[in-house]
Length: 351
Image 1 (tube, one colour):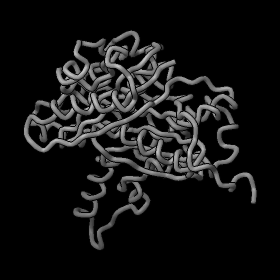
Image 2 (cartoon, helix red, strand yellow):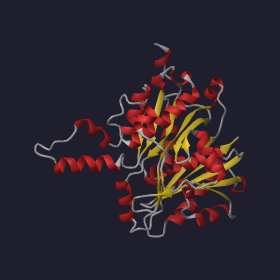
Image 3 (cartoon, one colour):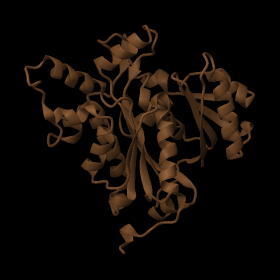
Image 4 (cartoon, helix red, strand yellow):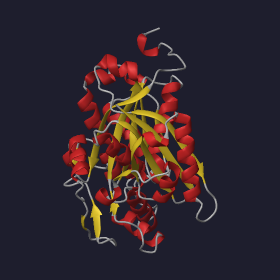
């Protein structure tokens, strides 16, 4: 039996985030995102869509980011994901993929590419019989396109999973990736989320909220999650330790606040972290009074959405990135509320 296929123990030591990257409205790479968050300057700019402003990745296209080969039919969200994963792999070096079958990908998405789905459907309905559509565009209409293409493009052969959970997608993906590692299914996981901006997505959000939704943004953030001992052997610095992640549902109107208060208290109890030890909270801006109630005080806030817009499925991953980008030490909370009936939070230990 080769080293690549040797069974691994069912338990691993402390899981850590040891590297990360982002492609955001601040630019390409973790440094651009860090500088943008620390400066606190909004990346929103005038938009031609239903919203007066939006936050787009500047000058981004699949061809410019990844080259001409293999990108002719690649949609925007897939290109954002492939590019973000690529930047992380580039930063970590070739050692990371020495055993590609032991590296997993867990990538969050909204509905995949809304633009691709709507364009393909329109072509199917308006084209001449027998419904002339470009079959090369069909893969862009499935939810797991971005995750699958990220693995294919970068030759990653381990478990490949797509997670969709609205505003909580990034936290759900982190929880799933942790279970993959603890179950021995792989040795490290690239975990995060990506979301694209399109006129189609903008109109759906506008109509669904009757014009009250926040301006939209796009981009992707991906983290390397692995055992702390593996990070140490590879010479990577521990950036954060995800101590625990908790989720709760609510069913009644106005139930989000109570659910989030209970969720935060439960997570802190599970992590054995006193509420006074929480240095700051990276929040999506929803139900902040509930967090104050859970902590018994008003914490220091780190808010991403006012800077990069509502990035939907990528929101929680950007919040995680913002927490790491602060460079602070101690315990931090990352919280989120999905309007369809779920709340969640992650307790981070920042060295």
